[in-house]
View (cartoon, rainbow, N blue to C red):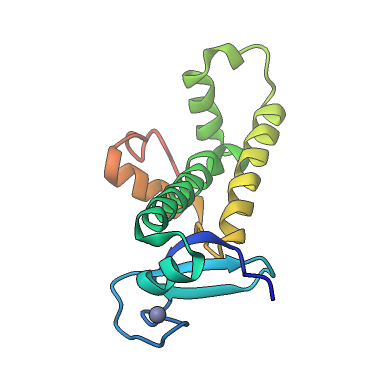
Length: 156
Ligand SMILES: [Zn+2]
């Protein structure tokens, strides 16, 4: 029998029990993918032991995976309006990227943004995560950073 190799998907809120030992009410559950493509959800101790990484390496890999998922979500929310060809978004895109004023058509900007969004969505889907809609995401980003100015400038 060969040992299973695991990759980290990230932390999950879907359950607070460990699939390995059955321990309940865990503060953190880590989703791991086996080399067969199965997904298991283990508490930190069981995950560190099953993978052979130890607590330190596991913690580092989990932090990296979670950061990657956050970036993918942000990409879906940030580029969604461009990919959707939202008129206000295209105007903003050109204002932020003056080099596109004369040499990029709307269709080119939309296609490029759609490809960026599709890649981020594929990453999220592989992790069993959902970015939600860009309209919701944009509201979240706006609330947090004020980046998208007011609703007048950004009619959703
Ligand atoms: Zn366990």
